[in-house]
Length: 466
Image (cartoon, rainbow, N blue to C red; front, side, top):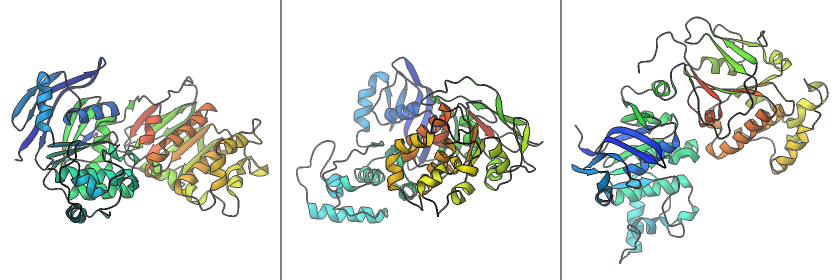
């Protein structure tokens, strides 16, 4: 069995009267990679700061290298773990004006070394970068690096200074898929240090961890070893199986739930018989088997798996749905929904022009408002567009006709974290005009935290083992 480096025994912590975590019992072993999944970000970060001796605890004890520390001994723990535990947050702790080599070898714990051989530092830095296959110039200034590249440099610095545990506190929220792949490729090459990867989503890269600890509101639900891990199991643990879970989105829907505007019915063999979408509501569905998501993206609105009803009327085509003021945004729409021969503005306003419109001319000229609000976007962008810009144009197009229902069946990775706030603002515009929104994803996506309700959907009569 691997050597135990750090253990938490019945550890609890409070902040301003609010309990962040309660009776945690977690062990970190030597050379083991552990994932911590908790959808509540405050509890995630508080746990990371505790491990990195940046926050105290109120009850329980920590055992580090066999030495026991109570809440009263916290300063002694911080001193003992100095250099042995490295904490990396979203904002990298490097000096922007200095090179990579200078950051790695000239700075030690907020002080400069008395001797610094630049040539030797460049050679050693190049060796480290090659060892972990990171394509960077040792003499490059840190200010020219992306956040993900700065995090990689911090990881190398921690390894070079002899860290035994590296804590990654939600650092990947602004990463592109390529940057994330490089990070986990680097982590896979680490064999002399433990890694604690903390994320407040159901990250597919949890599958590369030796163990994943599922937490909910600061409490440990279950330790999942790599042999038992699956994203479906983690989803069921964190969100609940076939249950509705209430989140706290940044802005609650102030409109009262009204009549049912959309109903999805399922045949025998599904854990749910039907799902209802209410007027003004934003509903998120995590489709564990991908059957509903596939039906939306393959133009199969009426098949053996599900039936869509709007105001009691069965819907079998996109055209029929549009006649009921219901619009879809799927991978198929993103690929084929824009007209290359038309300008960006014409693509945007096409539903408001002549016979193409299902609803006629909009009285308050919302299209003019959107063009004025996003003037720089319409002035600078031209076809062909990036995936996110195509999604945005399609959403703007639907906004102009005040739809009653919008169904999103797009890949969650298409909305990078850099676009989260913009996506949120567009969703709030739909809410303002009373649109009900259904988001369907095959895994947990950060965008789903905007929803009023979340439902996990599974095509099976056998429950997941929890």
